[in-house]
Image (tube, rainbow, N blue to C red; front, side):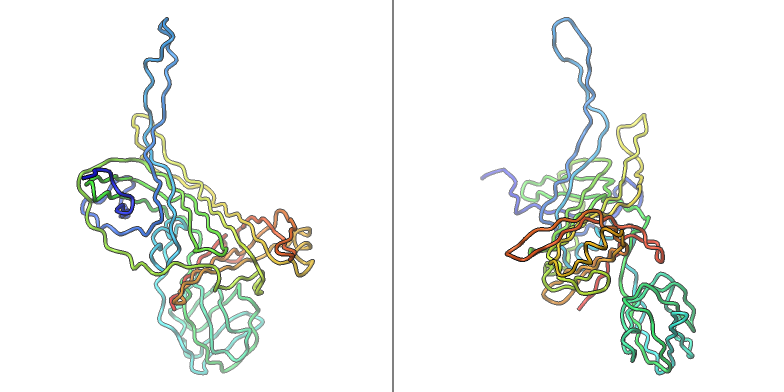
Length: 381
C-alpha cells in the first residue's frame, strides 16, 4: 500500500488560544473550511563567516523560530466568522430583539434624532448600526449609525440621506450585525491533519495579519496572511473538530455595489487589509512571546463603466468617496464591505468589449463620525 499522504484527505482545524502561544489543555477544535493552507514553519539562518584556511563552511546555525504563510478561504456565511473577526480585531455583536414603535416614534430633521414617547429604545447603544423600516418618509428608512442613545431618544448618522421630519411614526429597528476595525488581537493554534498517515502538524501562536478579496465574476475567496510563534508535530490529533456548517460559497453577482450610497455599475473591486503585525523578538529564547499590531492600512482599486466625468472631478478635486460592495450566496445570505472614506489616488481609462471603463486606486481613511476605516456587515436570509 502507498504510504504517501493524499491531499484530498488533508484537513485543518483550529482553536483560539487563551494565552498567546499556548494551546489550550483540552482544546475544542473547529473545522477550518479552506481551499488551501500554506502556513509553514520557518527559522532564520545564522551564517558563520569563520575562516579555517581550507575555504569550507562549517558552522552555520539556525536562529529564531516562527511560522509564516497564508490560507485561501471561500467566503461563506458564518463558516469564516472567526477568521474575519480576528483580522478585524472585533466580534460580531449579538443582535437586540427587533423594536417596533406603535405610532410613538418621531423623526427630527434638525437634531437627526428618533424619539420614542414610550421609551422603548433602551436596547439601542452607541456605536450600533440599526436598520430602520416602516417609516412613512423614505429618508427615514435605511441603515444608520448611532452616535447617542437613551431609552427615549437616539441620534442617527451616516445614513444614505438625512432624516426628515415625521411625527407619530411606527418604524421598526433591527440591529445590523457589523464589525469594524478594532484593537483585539486573537491568536490560534492550527492543526494540519494528515489522517491517512497519522501525522499532525501544529502551528501555535498564529495571528492573522493581512486579507485580500476581489469582487469579480468568480466565487469569492479571501487570501489571508498569517504569522505565528511556534511549530510542532504529533502522531495523534488534538481532537476531532466540530464541523462547520459548510454554507454555499458566495459570489459578487447578486449583491449591492454603491459609490456614495448610489447604485453604480462597477465591474471589479479589489481590497487589501494590512494590520502591520510584528512578533516580539526577546533575546534568550528562539520563540516569540508576544505580538504587536501597528496601523490598519486598507487600500484597493475599482473599475467602473465610464458614464460621467464626475469620477475624474472627484479624483482631481481630492473629494472623498464611500464604497459599498456585497457578496451573496444562493440562499440570500450576504456579507457587505463598507469603505467609509476613500481617497482616490490615481485614475486610468480603458476599453472593455467596446465599452469605456475607468479605474481608480484608493486609500481608506478614518471617518470623522464613527472613527473607523472599514466595516463588514453580515445578513442571514
